[in-house]
Structures are given as C-alpha cells and as structure tokens.
Image (cartoon, rainbow, N blue to C red; front, side, top):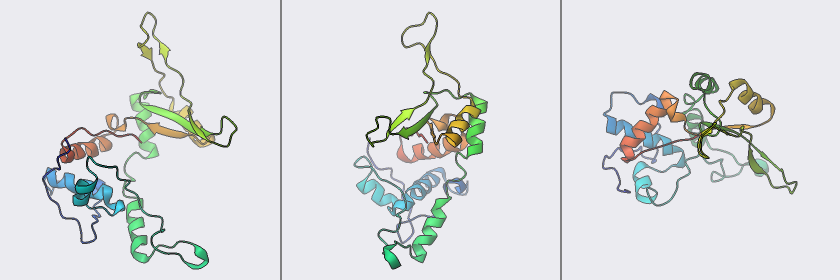
Amino acid sequence: GNARPSLPLEDDEDGENGVDPLSIVGDLTAPHRARALLSSIIAPSRVSAAEFYDKHWGKRPLLACLEDGSEVGEGAGGEEELDEEDAILVGNHATRLDGLLSRASIDDMMRRNKLRYGLDLNVTRYTDSMGNGVKSRITLDPAPTRRRGGGDDDLEYAVANPSDVWSNVDGSSCTLRLLRPHEHDDSVHSLLSLLESEFGCMVGSNA
C-alpha cells in the first residue's frame, strides 16, 4: 500500500542529509540505516524524507537531481553561477554513488554472469533514422532465436560479449542499459534490500 513507514529520522536543518549511501554501517539499526539511505538518495532534490512521504509517496514522482544553478542567479554575461554553499553540495553529491556500477564492475558482471541481450542488458543509440531531425532510440541487440522444437515463447537470448559491448559504447556512441543490475551486483542488491525494508515493498532498478 501507500502507507508511510513509521520510523522517523531527522534531516539536517536544511532538509538535507549528507550521508553517503555506501558508507551506512552497522552502528545504526537496520530501520535507521534504511531511512538514512532514503534521505541521502533524495537529498539532491532538497526534499526531506518527511516531505517525500507527505507529498510524493504514492502520489507523484520525484526527480532527485541537483539544480544547475538556474535558481541561484546569473553572473556576468548572463551565465548562471553556483554560490559557495551550492557548489559544495554539488561536489558532495556528484561522486556519492561512484562505488556503484563502475565500468570495471560492469565488465566483471558481464564476464562472470554471461549477461544476455534483451533480458539483462541493451545496447542502444539515439539517431535520426527517419531523416526528419527527430532522434529516436534504436536497440542494437541481436534478436533472440526460437529454440528447436519450442513454442513461440521459447526463445534463446544471445550472451553479450564484453568486447563487442564496449566497442559499441566507445566507438559508436552507444549507451549500455542494465535492466536488472541488482541480480548480478552485490552492492546494488544491498542498497535495494535496505530500501525494501524502508518502503515495505519490493524495489527494483535499472541503470
């Protein structure tokens, strides 16, 4: 349901919580760690956990990102500038999730778990394929094949070759989409497990 979890955890006086999601350790109880994690994830939006549950939970989406300075004011020449406080906030949050899904960990994930196109990942690119100036997403995944003797839904999906994937990403300006990274990466799995205890429901992810 949409009932708000009952555990309170105070945000700082600005409605923000600067906790690094990857550094929440065992000196807190699991419920408090979960609330601290939520507060940290939504901190760039300047929305507190209390406000999130009051105005967004089960009601409307929340985009948790840092402003680009548009609300801070404009400097010389009309260029937008961040004041010192906002610049510090940007710096703190710009790298707070660096420990999740690095290129090296994604490469290891593909080699160790034999990720499949269409089920575990997609290689995509935005292109003006119609020549009308409007870019649309195309997926470059090999099409699945029907298993011999199987039905229409009995499909075999190609295993992604990491070298081919990175060649497309680096050489063809493609994007790598991970459809369920929590099934293959322990750090993402642990993060979602904490969020499930916070929300009281299942949580998924893509990247």
